[in-house]
Image: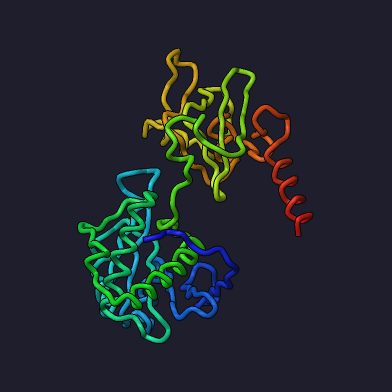
Length: 306
């Protein structure tokens, strides 16, 4: 079963139920019958009061993983009436910060549909490897028997969910960058960026699908004496997890595996152990051109092509 998502423009509609960014949100795609309701622990009661939550659907509980300071955890479920099931699941799990309910505006989802969607969501999440699953069982999608036409409809439904969920802060379905799985940095294709510090510390990174991946064998400064580093806690967690390990001579840290950062600046701050502007600290490998210069050049090329 293919995991590819067609690349074409979509209009995502976000309705702020309470009129505030921190309140209930209803998300959908123009022309799609699906409806995604998003709540937090503080808005959970109002989420449960929505009429849509009494429909057949699936739900996701999402938050920091208590057993992994760097990770996230998710629970995926389905129900004929989501309201009762999600309430029970939420009471049994303390980790969640975001609750998501997925139904349709026309109440078209059947029990067979949501059982299939639940199995596929669990399957895709496990394959992506971004979050830990709190589900004790992993139902197999091939055992969720649906007529061929219905299965095709549910795969199209999943394609829309792949677009919406990252927009509301859930990356559980998004595959990790290929560079994040590379054991050897020399096997990673594409444009590379580097930091070369006067101390001899050096690091290599690539940008892939909007994420910044520092490659294995890259190095990071140890105790340089800088006073300000917003990402000091992240660096400590990387050390605790064994992603950053002491070099043989004990003078620096080394990345034991690739690590994906939210931004070039976060990556530079960990490598240099100080607040850093990654757009200028990272340079094209073997060049003095900065990441910012590279971005600007790419933007101009796209404009010229259009």
